[in-house]
Length: 380
Image (tube, rainbow, N blue to C red):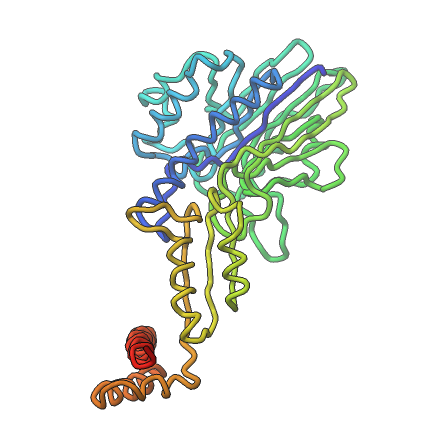
């Protein structure tokens, strides 16, 4: 191969996950920094000539010190070779007054010499005698300027491998103004052999069958539910005839999944799965169970979530529960209760259809337990 690259983007360091409990949110935030070790490990393993980081590396232009200092330390790690690493400001972390990309910012002073910030519009770097990189940064949070078309075109007689790197979107929905638009044929218009871009969080080649590829590597760790194919980097191999071979390599630790269970069989199968340790699971429980099954369902949900003393089977669980108690034939169990409790049970059955349904169901379940215990006692 004449040139080997690792292409990554959309790290979103410092991203907050407010829909999760504090400890779980911290796990997901830390994972965004930890994955960079694995990205650099891919560069080491494949003896890459350079690492291209195509924008939105931070979730904002002025991130907390923990994040920029953590990144600077990771990029300075002596375990990794001194290959060139290129950091491109994106639309989440553009070059704006006071941003960490300014030359006087302590982040810039901490970066080792082999790490290059794309901080001017005509950024050019000779990767090898036969290969050159052209890149342009985002200087605002939004614009209609096509940064890819702002890069220089191939000059007549230039037979070098030409790499472009910008941040933006190739989507062209009708009547929709795309932020930082990138023409889908920009790679050929400007005579590049590979166009490295960031913005979309899933791995995509534009178009899918492109001979000269424009590539989104996607976010190396997922950022939300429903993202299509996140968690990768692109390994790019270009031969001396300027032909590109592309590999998608998974680097993510976490998988995000949304699942709905509607009966006990599905809930038991979920509990018994062996792939839940590094799963971010949005679990929707929508089922009605008998009084006999209610306790088992509660125990399974506790096993999945965990307690202060015991880790849950799921790495991170976001639970939406509509676990209803089936009242059919439950009155006969209440018959063994004292009259005052029978009256309470009837009132709870009415309340179970109102705004306090969940509280009423739990109270009915406890009354059921009392009735069951009384029936067992009498039987004994």
